[in-house]
Length: 237
Image (cartoon, rainbow, N blue to C red):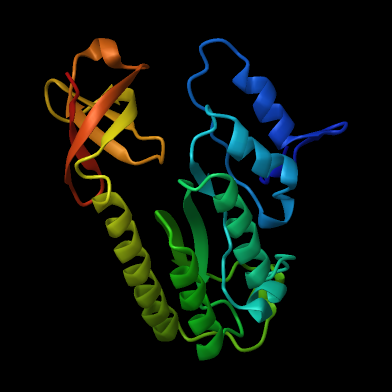
């Protein structure tokens, strides 16, 4: 299927149809997919997010930049407003959908206005998680030979501003879960004796004191606090 899993096709069936087939497998608790591309998000996939309870309400949908000029230079084949419209459709289908994305700061030719457009897109969308990086030239790639390479100190400055905004959004998203009860799929033992680590439907890491028998099972967990990189909770009685 390649890197863009949502480009999957089997005859007339796309990823959305495949998800529906998978959801009929007895005992399959959760379905996730990665990595997807905005250009391959079709109506069939959006409908699967609406209709399939096993498909978790979390989507990693890389955008890379909020500037159409930079997106074109990256050969992304979508615009910033294309991305906004796709997200609008997804959230209309699944209002509790949480989003993650990828961003690159300092791509060759990126102006102050281009970077401001990226920050604007982040503010418009709101992300639960994100991965962000400075552009790093790879020998032999078209971008490495482009004119107007962004100075290293400016790339670092832009990345810091971008990450500050993204971290604030992630913290706000995680804080909103404190006090709620989440169905957690426990995956493994935690760092401390008697502790297990699992994931919420929105892929948040959470740890709680729980018996090893819960590994591989879903249990209701009340979120009690927010840490730097994870949540803490208590298994509901």
